[in-house]
Length: 121
Image (cartoon, rainbow, N blue to C red; front, side, top):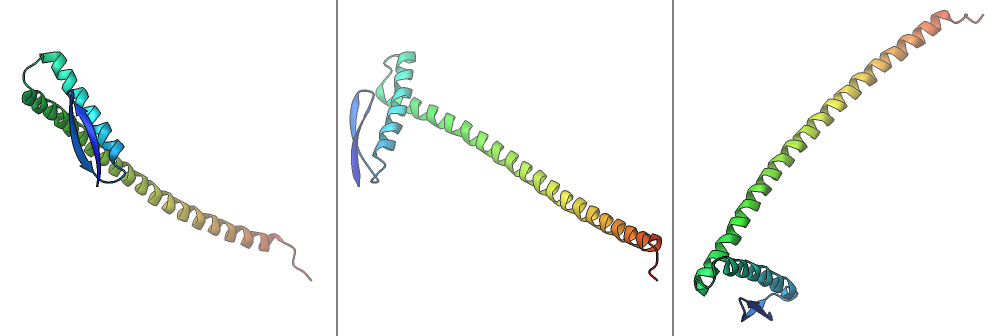
């Protein structure tokens, strides 16, 4: 297990993480620290625990909104895939019908050409 030291609200915290995840953990801590700093700027010193809880709630609110957006996009993707699949099925049917019609037309033309051509003889 790797260990990193992150700073949140001016305080350092030693944390463990999986090997190779050090930069990711540092980035997450920095992002969370920005929430804490924003709330401190807005509300002043109202207590570390309260600021931390409020920051956590802000993060969870943002996460909930993003999850809603993802669900909406997944639903839209499913609709688009169904529309695409339906269009492909319809195109296949149209291709089959056109191929059949062209085949019949070719047979008729061959029959007509056979009637019109002079007989060898």
